[in-house]
Length: 300
Image (cartoon, rainbow, N blue to C red; front, side, top):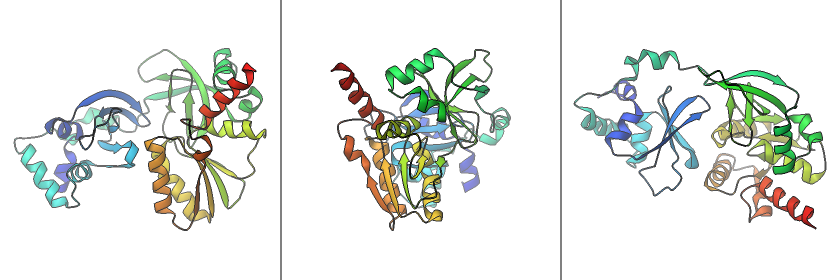
């Protein structure tokens, strides 16, 4: 079997062949994803995601991914493409599902699954209440950085609304029940202050929390919001080409947050990376710390 043939095999077919346990489907940034339990370890929270349109995979907490051959190498602890091809040849000698023979999937390759219908000033009472009463973010601050975005899922007419934070060519969307991206072109968000030391946040709620806690409306240093741990490459690229000397990283205190910290340290050895999560050790993230602090203060 040749490399091109191998990459035409659908990743979900391979995972089914090796008995990987399927968990659920979800809407990812670029389309429908199948989520599996990773065969390499016991994972209570399945994290091996397969994009059905692009036929690519990612093991989110470990910041790895790619095409089918990359996955075969990853799961079999080898760097040899030849070994991977032999494994696939043995599994699929009786035939396989070729991605190139599925024109309907290919045609949808660059189609957004979530369509933005309207962008306007923050208006909805439900969104304002969610911000103020559940996230403890003031409207005065929210109106500077957030929009109200109305959106719908492809092939459905129901329109939903969410908080929208600019993220690349689109918006990251958030309400009480949903978190995702509208359209295509999501990326990191940069609030550029032209400083060589920067603040990094995993999500916009943590960024707004930082401003609330500091009682300021704009950061004194350049702030970068990842919007997704999968965009760590964009952050690293920005750091490497911008002469950044110091990073204060307000990461989530989970596996994905720790992996992004390791990736930063590994990719930017000459940059001082400060793990600021030590200041909220007993909390999942900066916003959770702020929520509990605010509730305790209001209870007095």
